[in-house]
Length: 476
Image (tube, rainbow, N blue to C red; front, side, top):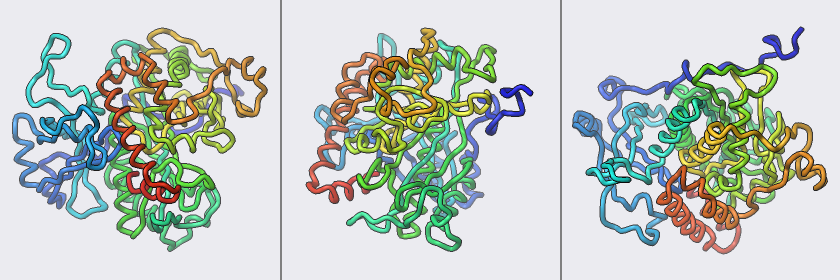
């Protein structure tokens, strides 16, 4: 028997050709579905989800216009609490163009629907000598551009799924977890318990809203749970993630609890991540071997490893993010490396011998990251590796944590660098790597650094650690 043949194939096979966003409805269907209001949603650079709520009749009138959308103050992409970052004027407006492919019902709130869009200029502006409506600060536009570039220049496309970790809190001041349980312990989901009802209600809402849920279970910290969603193309996956987080927030609130995606609210308990699973697929007919990575998969991995030091400022954007990503706590560790089925590396390769379910788990992402920008950086790095036919200089680390090796053994494996170990160091790496600007644009990098500096200052102003944690969970 061939040990790498079909008998050893693992996981559910997925393909970009057979997947797309599910659950989207058409505007003309809303009335028949009992919808009375539509939340027009956007995600700012600090990953705060904001909205305008339109009555259905006005929403339908808007959708009949030649350019459906609404005006938003330009300040919304430079705002932290009620403060604007330097250089962002209070005047001026974006035009937020509604993307009807994102329209979904919200089963957790009677009569409510959800839709997203793209930031654009009201009138065309000159960009590199030609006129354009596209706003350079729009996160969804940036990710869409990266995905299109990868398909055009590297002949690859992607599927993305997320592990959504969160903690259900009884109180936020002081911080109080909902339940005491062990990792994946059935005691965390006892029949009739509040946590079991909340998780069931969340997943029922997601499934009714068209989001594929593959599993849920208790995680390691008090009150901590994880919901895993199925793969989608990158833009649709990010949209689904925002929809899922809003569902989690709202269902928890209906049960008189607060859900938080904060990366770590106590140094005495594990943190919460947003582990991101990415499969890469050739568009020019290259096959994936069933016993090793294809050359384009190797190059994708090499590209991420090459630019790994610049990514955390985007994918782990707050000071507390670096309290989660440490060695020895099953969070991925601090050394830049990868390994097969090793949860103590930042890039875990899963299902090596199953080409149609094989994927890379990127563990250095948390729930405070804007998913569009984080994915743009990760996919942009990987796609550049494919375009340049990069090969990984780091060997597979499948049986040990890099932190447990001697320096000599790490060097022998090609492991020579660590991620930035602090928020300040991560920001320095982002600012000095020209790759980040080539993917996101200088305007986004500059604005991103500015709004997160203001946000971090606000979070750090609270004094004692308990008050900081309370403010953190009120944001995220």
